[in-house]
Length: 226
Image (cartoon, rainbow, N blue to C red; front, side):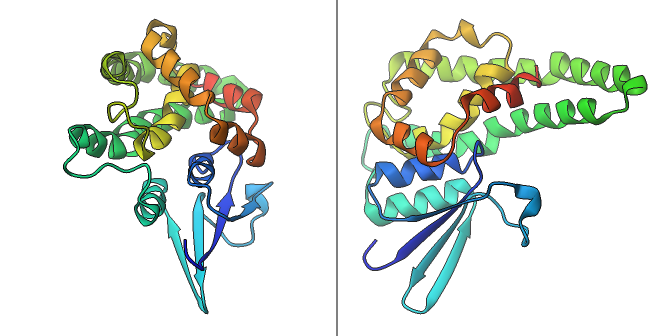
């Protein structure tokens, strides 16, 4: 990005992995600052945070979708023009991941953490509440969302037709989490193929290595939400 210096503040196994992947896809030079223990961060920082240093000015940007759009628009890569036939899908799915899809997963994780932290003698109450809310609301909502995505990806290679875009990068995290958080994820073959397709991208694999990604830890973190 011209003479700007980019610094990504990254928390392993978090949504900031998407921005690290994006930086690799765009082949940008950047500095990676990895937070090993979030509880020991002196200043409360959101992850991801992108610092853009140019001359004597430093600007910081948070929110994954905002960072993704900023980087992609500056490079004019992984974005669709308004004249593209799939621009409608691009606009929708660009914001779908964090606005509609991720909140249900976050609620699942909240109830799972409450259950784990409840004293043992009372844990059956929080576990029952978690199971009831999952069964009565979150799982049906996620089923509807996964059905929609599966149908769309049966008809398109990527979210925006045949073109890989930042919409795919943003959707990856909650979709991958759903693989462990939703008990019937195996019922969606198009989604399984889509995740496999993402995994085959060289930039994705490079980002996993640089970002200290732990597949085992990620699976454990989301499986407890079932």
